[in-house]
Image (tube, rainbow, N blue to C red; front, side, top):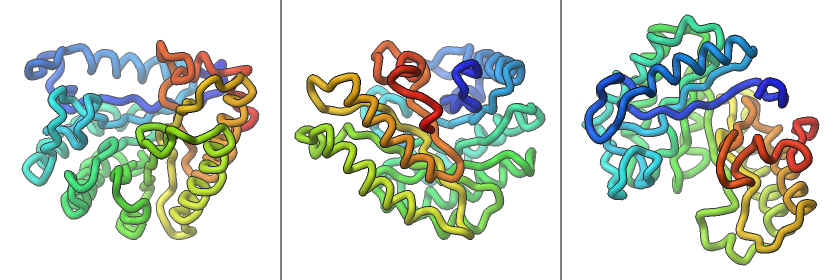
Amino acid sequence: MAANGLNAVRIPVGWWIASDPNPPAPFVGGALQALDSAFTWAERHNIHVIIDLHAAPGSQNPNEHSGGRDGLQTWGDSQIAQTVQVIDFLAARYAKRSSLLAVELMNEPVAPGVSLDSLKTYYQQGYNAVRRHSLTAYVIMSNRLSGSSLELVDFASQFNRVVLDMHYYALFDSKFDSYTVQDNIDYVNNFIASEINAINRPDGPLTFVGEWVAEWQVKDATKEDFQRFANAQMAVYRKATFGWAYWTYKNVNSHWSMQWMMDPYISLGNA
């Protein structure tokens, strides 16, 4: 990663990592040792680490990456205390590691299943948990999927070293099914660019495009089409004041793998 010019890695973890090496079924142990190793490798190669709580107790969205297989989304007020305990555990363990850049309190909570009031209550308590162990680590708060992109800006502005995370995909919505190459590029240059500009405020939180990918619904796209799409996204995501993270670095699906996409598809010289 360092050789490819990357300076940070966003590492997703599940809430059960706090019970490692013997998490409750059906989860398996080993995540904590892997995360410890990642910090060691990151420090060896001068890479910053963002710990991302990708799966919260009860699942903050109905997708499998939130820790469930049945499509249920039950995270709410009754899970806040346990979720804060996980953040406290992670912050306490890694606060002194030189490579720790940030702790992301939750990945992709989905509205309306996760209410804005519950999320703000949790973000306040999660922020406090991180600050008990570190005054310098950034605290990342993810926008709700299907919520307003501006709904957390004023709330997040009251905290120190806080980042708002938003994710952009030309996927997962039927409107993209008929988009052409140029339609997708225009969507990035117009809609996404204007949204990031609206969130960026001089006295507001930093902004982070925590997930994006150079993949779409376009059929028979050429190498040059993918290059144009990737370059358009990187040009716009430069507006994010905390930077961006590609999903993912390694993946069996070529365009989802940044390692595979690096030169000639993606050049960090354009980032």
